[in-house]
Image (cartoon, one colour):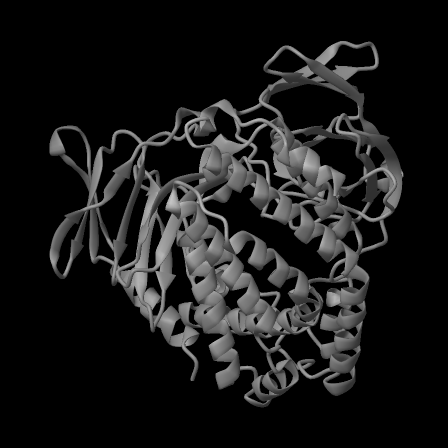
Amino acid sequence: MALFAAVTMCGLPASAAADPSDAAATHAYLIAQYRLVVAVLHEAAAAHRAESAATAQIARECRGVVSGVPQPTLKRIVEFTPRQKGENARLSRQQQTISLELDAALARADDSVYRQADEAYAAEVRQLSWSNPAIAAELQMQTAVKLENDSTPAPPFCADARAWAQSGFRVLPAASREFEASQEARRRAELGEELSLDSLLKPYENASDRALIRRTEGLDLELLASGYFQGFSHLERIVGFPHAGPEEPRPVTVGHGRTAAGTRFEVSAGRRSGIGSCHRSATVAYTRPGSPEVLIVGGPNNPICLSPPRYRHPEVFCEAGLETFESAVPASVRSVRLVLADGRAIESRVVLVPKRDGGPSGVYAQQVRGSTSHAVSLVELNAGAEVVLALKLPRYRCRKPRNGSESGFPNVAELAAGHTPEGEPFRIGAYGEFNGQPFLGVDTGVDPELDETPAFEPGKAKAFPWSLKVGCAPHPYAILYGILAPPGTSVMARTPQGTVALNVVPVEPRLHAKGPLVYGVFEALPSELVVYGAGDQALYTENLTTQTQEEAQFCEGYVEP
């Protein structure tokens, strides 16, 4: 209790001086968060026992229940008909729903153990109030959702999986559809939620508050390292879900090191390891001192491809309050210097990968704790400390997670947000780069339901190489989007209701787009696009009749028989 007393006696931040009660409420909230994580960590062993009991029961009752689920074909996706693509999307969605039921069945076992701690936390924060009523409203909503999860019965996984299998893996049972609808509603609500307790409470925090936040995050890492849900993948195999791919050869450890953040890392590689077109890769796993468990394995670029790349692209991502930098480097590079905006430089040796394990090459891995000074460049040095290559890093924002919230990935930039014709939220974002351009994607919160079809045709230069996101019944929509390159200035779409202009949104210079984002949201795909240049002169017209027919065929295959 000494920690709580010390924290409570701290002074108020200057920004909250006008209303000290806001700072006091924030103190109380942070203490309640800390107590909750302490209580959850104390009950972790009991929760794992409950999870193990639930795992054993499911393994006994429905071993191999979905073992006949169709396997992915080796046929290239471009060879599928639109209807086959819809059928595959339906199977993928249904399989994910049944898998999520299995996940929820195990999670409910843990929730029952943690319910007392969650109720105590709810009682503490229920009495808190701030001058901004949105803070208490958001907090109460989050607490109510957690208590509702704790009290929700586990889904009948075995019965639902068996019924799905008996339909030939074509039709979900009613209970699965209800579960799916509840999951989709929650994801859509999270996607549309704009409030953030982090940002709302930040003006009322002082130095001791931030120290308490770091303590809470440290306990979160201990909980993560305790092995939460380690048996889930094993149970998936027991009930009959197919492996994601062929068995990979066991990788070998080729090196290890320590980062500037105090974490340790280990690099594993194998000559035949890799995914997609990458035939040789390495994996970096990070651990905290004193903990044998892996805390972070990977990110957007992990496994790291060791095959000769066409261009060098170091990956930067954020997780567990740390900024992580990873890259494959040539065998001539012996060390890498990370340069920060405040002038500091962190130099560290690379891990060399020998030829027998997929090299010759090297792997650079570094972690620093989130700070106000961002990294600006990486400098690769050879054995003689001579510069091999200097790479400028794009400016990024590493959102520091709090108390178990999801990590923020700095290479994802939101460009636009809106709602479908039936009011469901969506966001358009840039997810890294591809061929020197931002790689765009649409997030609706319901990934398995929708088909995304790039419309780019090799050899045909277009000012507006659009992509398409399609939603089938019962919530049909079409989101058409892309980067409008010069000399294009605007795009019009012909619909049954008339001609409408697509939205034009400027893109930040740091994303290196050749023009603005242009997008439109429709109940059905337009029949035609007209791309205009300067002086409202039509550059070209594009007929979408074929795409409209393919969309209809896709949805015919997607809808359950």
